[in-house]
Length: 306
Ligand code: GUN
Image (cartoon, rainbow, N blue to C red; front, side, top):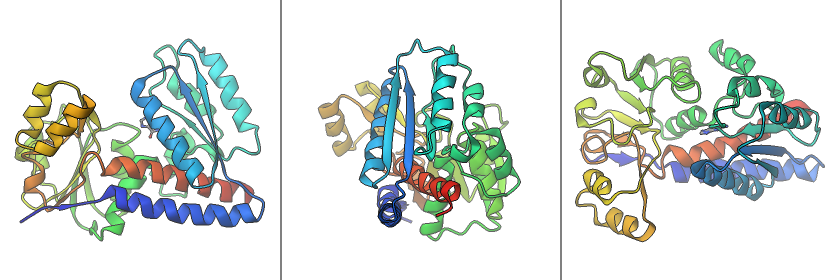
């Protein structure tokens, strides 16, 4: 069986066009959805993500504002910035980019965001609402995964899903959403006994551990659907050759840029055993941004009841 690519870029484009159309309608009625993004420090990957998020928001007609702070910002100063955005009526959605510098207590910051402006769905109130199946903003990456599976017509009811990774941002909410869609879900992690054996039982395998190429062919049942959430940057030629041996296009792209991305799945051994898979790049990543825009629009409608 030749595996089919689940094209996150195409689905993301469709969602972004839908959001842009709805934003234009609202704007014509005098309501411009507003998104505020906070970036603390100069984490290189975060700076790239934040720039992409800002550009995508502006392209959709959303009023976007990025607040950049130095790494030495105190927790109290960040709380004050969040508080000011909470009180700003033009701001419908607040995103604080993770990771934050170590001296800042992230949980305290996310608890300070007004739950009605919590575009990531990380506030405990919204996480609790998601757990109970109540309407809430849903974390962008998990929501993107579910939207991709829905639009690609991949059935979930009754299937066996394994989510590898138990983060609050991806693993746990993805598992909850799959459960709500009537999959039988197991959350696995680095301490799971016989992880490859467990993963081989999965009809749908979600890899979200943040380790390059960790999920090899030995983890994949023939014909399973693979969702690769990992975005790992490779900068050494030896690593690129290890994962992309014989892939001339990838090697030449690496030569040009000096780096390339690999997911949590080993492209040479895991993807060929699947029936469908999300590539890296071009799979889950673009959906995260599309859902950020969708969530911003939804929060705007809800708070301003237009
Ligand atoms: N850093 C990596 N992914 C995310 C995300 O989905 N939201 C935020 N706020 N920060 C992130």
